[in-house]
Image (cartoon, rainbow, N blue to C red; front, top):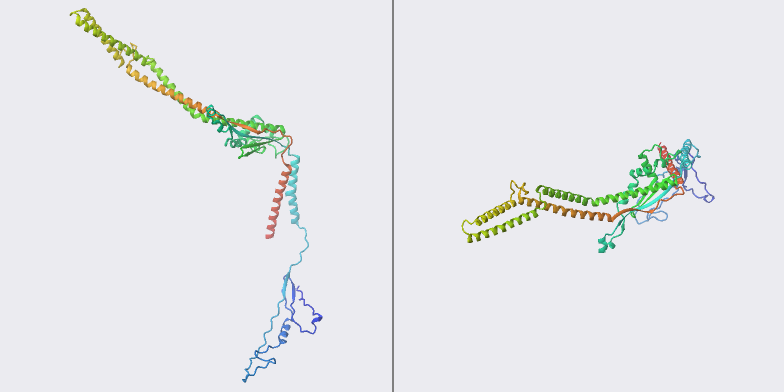
Length: 476
């Protein structure tokens, strides 16, 4: 329904004055079209008629045209202006008044969803944390891998030992140890010494914080990462282990076993590094030993076959015999020359000395033949069948091989001893800066924090669902 336009009443001071058009403000409700007033056209026409005509340019005050001796031109007749258009009222839209808020079914649904999705799960979580979840005790142990370098006698004599640090930290061993503590191998080693399933399994119902009774090794490894937390500082190379258990004794025992197994692993790494450092030298030493054994066996076989222990000494004896025969031959020849000068023909002494010279010459030829190529009766006579020349050649070859094998063996043995001494100079060990602690107060689980986190996440999820619901509702 359209309300009539409101016209302000004239005051006492306005009496006797001509009426002027007064601006009007129409208040129209939203949805109503404005309607012009009935007297607006009449007021515009009266305003045009009551307005006096403006004098022409150059006329006097009476409105007469100036007289310049010429007749005044005829002024065109002025047409009255067209009537003014009625003024449109200014329309202000006013929003309808809001109705009183009422509770709808969606409001009750949102409230019920808040109770079901936030309040109830939070209450159940608090009941579980404070009524069912058992206390956990924490034992801490901290250690670091160190390497100590001992000084050799040469370093101390040369004064280089003071320039070398006595202890240092290995760069890769802490990283290996950090991964080893969280590995399955560590779990199996500790489980062999301490029944982890009995330690982590509770007799009462606690499916969240305890290990199931029928847990496999994979389940045990996953649960190990929850109960054993490893913190590693890459800058200082320090490792801290926090072991959790349901009793103080088990927590302390677990931390102690972790430290012992970590120490055993470091010893294994040191042994492997020492073996790697001496492996090449050991291989060379083994080759030198095999070569020396073969050379000595070949020399022994040669002596057994030739029945000569030292061919050089035997040759020296043969050469001495040959020289002796040469001396006797020379004496016999001299004696024969003397007899030929003093004795008569047919003297028996000449026949004797001639036979002696022939025998000596034959013996010298035989001895020279022995030094060359052996005859068919050489073996029967205790002489080498192939002759002393070949025997000496083979002996010298075997002697060179034996000497080379001995020299290589001495060098390989020295290199192996040096490598072994160098490997023993550097030893790795595990040093504990924090011995396994014995807990007295439970530190886990953090019940207020767990309840607060679950309540916060539930509230965020519920609030997101409410926003999604209203966004779909506003689109319809």
